[in-house]
Image (cartoon, rainbow, N blue to C red; front, side, top):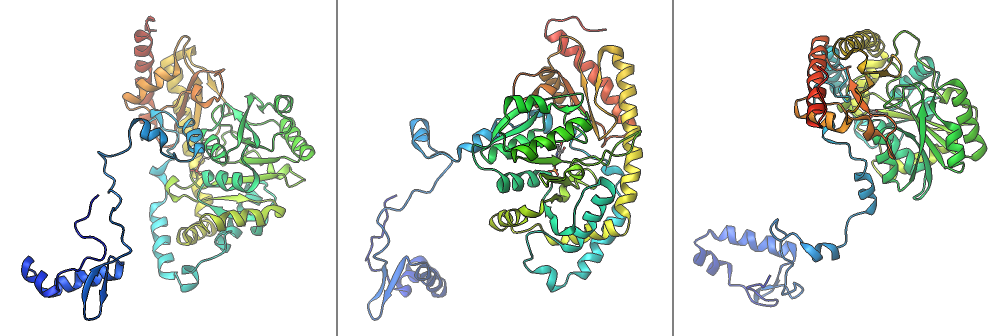
Length: 470
Ligand SMILES: Cc1ncc(COP(=O)(O)O)c(C=O)c1O
C-alpha cells in the first residue's frame, strides 16, 4: 500500500491541522501524542513533528476476505501444522452436531440438583480469598484432589494418594496431557478398533502412530496387539465400558495387558469416563487397581457425573511421572480455573455427588430399559443390541443391507443424532450399526425417537433400492 506521507516528511502544525479539518486542537494534539507513542512520528525541538524515519514507505496490506490467497499462492504459503490435518481425519460426521435424541454427549441434566449447585456457587464466591486468586501449582486445588482421591479409592478401587491426582479440563484434556508427557512423535500406540474418536484426535495431535487393535466380547484383543505391534509405547483403553461396543474387558485380558506393559515398558492409558453407571451388577473395579507396576495412567471425568461444560476431570499419575506431567502443565495451561474446583469440592464433601450418582443410576437404568423395549417393539429381531447393561449409550446393529452412514445422515436430517458404528473404525468396519445415547432423554422422548428411527431405516432402504420392511 503506497503512503501519502513519506519518512522524514514534516507534518503541519497542530493548530493548522485543527483549522483545516475543523477539529478541536485537543483532538489533534491527542492524535499526535498517540502517533508519537506508537513510533509513527518523531518530534524535533523547535522544528516540528516529522514522519518517523524508521517507518518503511510500503506498509503491509491489510488482509481482507476478498484478498485471501488463492490457487498456487495458497500452495506456496506456509501451511499450519501437518498434525492438524491428521486430527481432521478423526472429525466425527454431522450426527454429532445436534442436541436431542439420541445424542451420546448428553447426560441427564434434567435431574441435576441445580438448587444445591447454585447455593454452593454463591457460597464459594463469598469465600474466595486472595489465596484462591493467585497462581497455584499445576496439580490443582488440594482439597479437591483429596476428595477425588478418596472417592476413587473407595468407589473405583484406584490405588492413589492426593499427591498423584492432577486436576484437568475433562477426559480429552487428560488424554492430551498424557500423550504429551508419555509419548514422542512417531511413537506407535495401540488404540481400540473400533474406538473413541476423541482418543484418536489427542494421539494424532501428539504425532503418534495409531495402531488399531481389535475389540471383541472380552474387550481389547491383547494377543492380537502383541502379534501386530509388540513394541508399541502405549495402549489406550476403556476397559470398564468400551466405546462404542459397550463391552467390559475380561479379567484375563486385563492381566495380560498389564503383563505386556510391564515386560515391554509400555504405558497404559485407562479412560474410565462413565463406569459409575452399571445396572444389575456392581461397578467393575479399575484396571489401575490391578496394576502392581505403576504402568497405568488413569483418566476420569466429571462430564457424565455432573455436566459436560464443567470441563473438569482428573489424572491419577504414576508417582515417578508426576514431575513430567507437571512440566507439561507448566508449559501449557498451568492449571484449571480454581473457582469451579472449590464448588465441586463442596459438592463432593457434602455428599451431593454420591446422592446424585445413586439417583442417576436408577434413572439411566430405566431410560435404558425404555430404549431396549422400544427397539424390540419397533424392530423385533431385526436389531441386535450390543454390550453390557451400563453407561448412557448402547450400540445396535441395523437390519440387513442398511448402510449405517446413510441411516445416520437421514436420522440427523430428521433431528435424531446417532453416530454410525462404521465411523468408529480406523480401518475397515467389521460391524455396522448405530450408537444410541439415552441418558439425557425421558422415556417418552426415547419411544418417540425409536418410532422415528423406524421410519428413517425404512426410508433409507427405499432410497437405496430395497423394499421397506413394512
Ligand atoms: C471414551 C470417552 N472418554 C471421555 C469422554 C468425555 O470426555 P470429556 O471429559 O472430555 O468431556 C467421552 C464422552 O463421551 C468418552 O466417550
